[in-house]
Length: 125
Length: 108
Image (cartoon, rainbow over all chains, first blue to last red; front, side, top):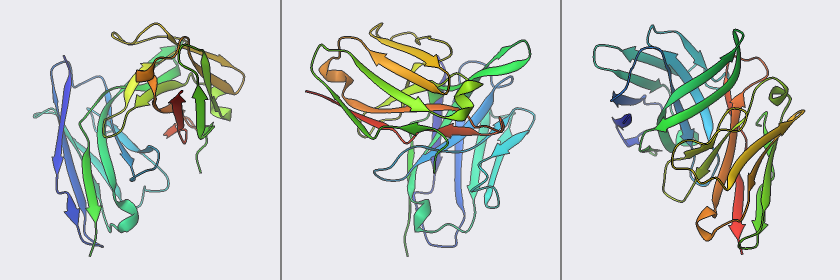
């Protein structure tokens, strides 16, 4: 059974850097993409970005200038850093495993089958 | 703004059938996946691919797609199905993930 356990600082001041880590237990780490997703209080889900075991990343264009996702395959962990945070970055942050279905070499399905428990990060002075 | 559009709220009488839709150009190329989220909980995958349910998801949940619209259908809605539902896919560039704005389902 795959489990994702995440942790990081829950209270930040404006301009600080958000830092979260997600550890993967059970199943394979390599061969998948791993993603970060956030949800502001009372709002919808927002895709932040993803990384694979070799370090290849894709980021949400609206956050790209401030986001870094990294991977530590020796520990089966991946991490999120978001710099220069403001109150607008207050959200529950989730880590998740990405699944991709290919048909004749083309991506046809993209989904998240396992999720972390979520971490509430509050940005306040 | 999201590249995937959902109705903000939908209601259904207990035991009846409800369809939740998701529209977006990228859905012409990619299947949508669907997530159920209850208050204070992480989202749970309920439908992925053409029409696949993860283990443990009741068979009253089904998915379909036509053109730029994906649908999640709950046949015989139960009280425990009251939740927020989100669709997800790749965006039109194919390089990023994207979520719909979510639909709040009320079971009357």
